[in-house]
Length: 41
Image (cartoon, rainbow, N blue to C red):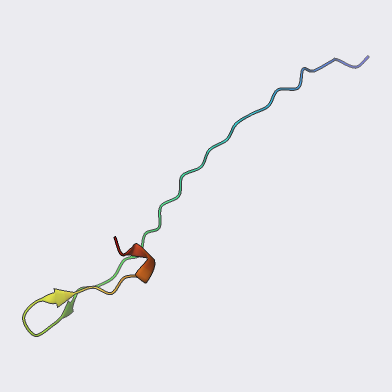
């Protein structure tokens, strides 16, 4: 005997974060860290 199962839509949302670990480099009067261009703003 088969059981009837009600079908139900499920809404799934996913958030994603990008993490890149870099070392600060010495610059003449400060320090800088290079990051991807799409991080600007």
